[in-house]
Image (cartoon, rainbow, N blue to C red):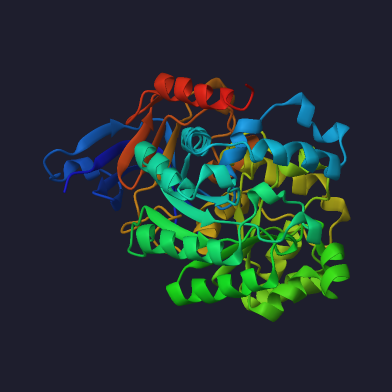
Length: 459
């Protein structure tokens, strides 16, 4: 089975299961969807017919990044002055944003997904979990189907978080009625997309996550049935938690959100939450003890202005940590590589006020690779080693912005930051982005179609 030989790589950031390390001046050979070998002079061996050769002199090769929390549909509300967080209260902002969300059509969901995934791929992301919780009634139930269609077009490894909201605004949620589903509707469609798309096999390109939007916006029965369905089908569970809602939950239920989720079983090694910046030390310790993971989304801190999540405390306790870009309502880009840099720098900013030291820069790269794989329940992605999925990206460091930085490839992204797209992104052994172009699609055509869909929100 033919693959690609990356010849004369300046550095390969590999991990054979014993931790991240850097190999210098080596080749990397893929075969089909997986990595065949990493080492010197692989090109001197007999290669399968059809093997492509990529000269990788000067290239740093990294494991593909894994985005564990996003809202693709929100790419259609980016960079709007009328939705500026700094000028609005949260309630005022919600009152403006949700009516816009409720107008999105099926076509908008498809093109906004393409928009987010394309940007992710350009910046080294090879696997993405999108938390799609917005289901306007007029848009129908095929929105997850269209996301899988978009992922296949671009060649992205995609985990669909089938989200939903069931609690009406009249009972304390923030969700307008036009975007509500019943628990039966939600669970039935979760089951449908699992049975239609979920592939648990190694190197799977399609998986499904049961992801009720958040406890504060769902009936208890919605969450109970979500847990039961996910465990019956053997899929991962996900929700928003610890982003300021605990006082509301305590008033409504007599319990903070972590207590509430523990009571209904929405915890464990098959479960991860997004955000968690408001959790107490005791609650973090309980997450660690149960194996529940956290998708840390650093960049919303800039816009939302909430406290910086205590990643050093989570790390010290052994909480499983991944990274997410989050949606464009609170982060106007879909660049997970930039989030690695933001995550590290934000922790340095508040280090003096924290009990635990900031983890080393390379640890933040691992949150976006092995950490993300752990949250998604994958043992076949997140590392560069023989037998692992051939998900990777390459940066040609023979440029002036990298002078003085090349001695430490594992810290380059978190500490220095990367200001341009990758030179190459490979997913499942196939090159999907190279030299400024997508391999499968014409970017100009994608752009024009997305802009046309976007205009339906302004007319």
